Length: 357
Image 1: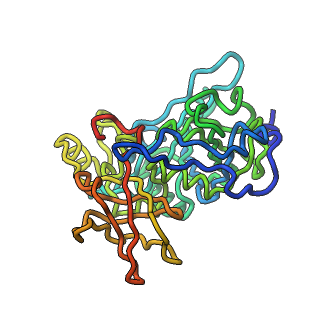
Image 2: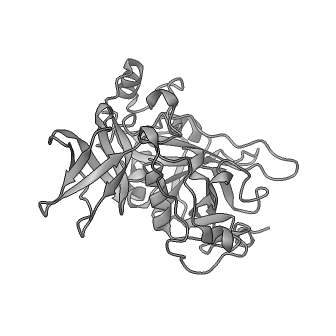
């Protein structure tokens, strides 16, 4: 069956705030586990919320040397195709990784998809990245290609979708598609089960998942920020963000046994010393916000005015901030340009390893 026939029964147009996950007030400053979606989703029979991610783009890397080439640049091992299920084509497996510069700072965050290998086809990988750095990522890959038998090219025919269950009970459950079909590529989001599934398809319309409904992409970003998951250049500024402070280990994005890659030295040394004083935390802003929102890089302060970190990015009253881990429990605030003050609370996601809470 062709990809165009996979998303059946999707409502046309954007549904506004029809699918949101909210923060719950619980002890120990932790986020709720997959906070519930709007009742309208279940009321209209929708099982899946489908978000078109127009700000994400794909780069195809193929050729006999594509695997060793990418291993020398990425923080993680490469995803391998899932085992074939009978006569059906094996689905892609996804992996998460960062490209680093020589100083060990993040350049680009990517989700990688491994294609099934056939005897008559060279190994192929798709790299999902922020669309604003598509050209820069291609140049970065070509710069390091040297004599490798590798082809690097954009993949504009495929579009990226996030697919999340309409109810939190379905997190980590069955796939939105019964099996791999047509040219669509379906894979679990490798960062955390809280982020559902990734779907790559040639369709621009939500016609793919049975009982799927098109939802406002703003709700996807709200959910992502509530779960503490950074994505793209606003959350991970190129040449600024450090991978371990960005919780790369928690999101299954780094291997410490795979061998050398660009920027490995600082990352490995920091990991083995075990000293990571600052991390990206999900935050909620309380009270009236400035008309233009909070400026990225604004200093976060304690009640006494001591700096504890910086606000990174957000959507409305939720976002991410890089904060000193030991100082997130007290009252925090941000000073605005209007000489005002916005209270801020930081949380520890419940999907993080227990030792970090």
